[in-house]
Amino acid sequence: MSKFSTSFVRVSLVSLIAILAACTGPAPESDGGSRVHDPYENTNRSIHNFNRGVDKALFRPAAKGYVTVVPRPMVNSFNMFAENLSLPGQAVDYLLQGKPKEMGTTLFRFVVNSTVGFAGLADPASDFEIPRADTDFGETLHVWGVAEGPYLELPLYGPSTARDAVGVVVNLFTNPVDFAPTRPINNLGLYAEVVRRLGDRGLYSDTVDSILYGSSDSYAQLRLIYLQNRRFELAGDDEDAYLGLYTDPYADPGSTAVTDPYEDPYAE
Amino acid sequence: MPSKLFSRRSFVSTVCVGLTALALPLPALALTEARAASLVNEVVNEINRVIASGKSESAMIRDFEKLFVRYGDVPIMARYALGPDARTASPAQLRSFTQAFQGYISRKYGKRFREFIGGEVTVKTARKIKAGYEVKTSVKLQGQAPFDVTFLVSDKSGKDKFFNMFIEGVNLLLTERTEIGSMLDRRKGDLNALIRDLASAG
Image 1: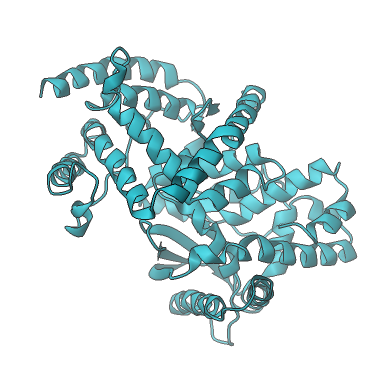
Image 2: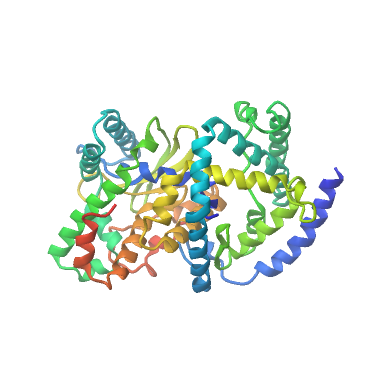
């Protein structure tokens, strides 16, 4: 419990800083679901090349080995374990977003999977149809009205935005079981997350490879896919936001990308 | 590592299902919400039939290409994917680009058919939108949490055909437009070179 309360204090402090940091810049969500705001493109591209190098030399082979050696059910279990460890932090985020119901189901899911689910290695909560949690501090900032900010590709982490990058850092600290810079042995959540990513990289290897190595501009592909998917997640089931989604390629299929209303998915 | 976006909801693995499913043929019924929804089921069944046929990969890809042409509005998709260059292209260039695009898409996504084995598509809603009809579905692939796939259908070509799809918010036609744009840039805007290379890409 005391861990929780320190987390809350940390959250409020860090989030203040976060807001200040992320407040600048346009709000691409209101411009449309595929608008790209990337003033740091040169830097981002360098980091992208670095990430691609790391992936090619280390992460991809490690991930392929991991999913080859470790049976699929165990990979799934480790993924569940990592997801379970992230639940208390996600519950905090739901609370900060003013969503007590989601917070409740997230905590309930954590309790069920931590006990009946063998410390989170299994997922009985899904069998009981307890909804999955899927949020983070980046979403909390979004709910609070913080603009998305410029697109960023983070070293070793991948695609993000200014707002989501703040969220990533804050989430390192808000999860009670996650991150302890001074006591590396306690970084269980972080290690679990790395293992989970390894599993995902291995399981979705063909898809990731086709983007990172099959595209003629992997940076641009990854950026577009990340931004659209992230905005879709954040828009949720907002029907009105969805309505403006599809303009008509039949109207003028040769229009430029900039003025094409097709670029405007979740706006209006 | 750059796999963050595949973590939570593994939408991208469906890209495979993706453009393959864009193509559906239809009889001469007026396009309605119900019709649009049944089209999605039709195309999913057709794709599953091809997968279940047990043919070689190259034979399957040929079958996927036939489905793509029959059910998808390939000319409008190709034109959109080419972007502003479609305006300055000659009719002959546009024809051969469309042909090359069709093969490229069929190979690129057809190769990934294995990820769709045992996949289930459930239609959630269908409704009218400006450009035609939107059909929202939930797709369940083996060993993955379900994710949202949205199909767009229109009869503006004269037949009821698919013209785009979104996987967890990712617009596949726009993704291809970006890719084709990059390929064109890399060839210094030489459309003929692009058409030549696209014929074997994917």
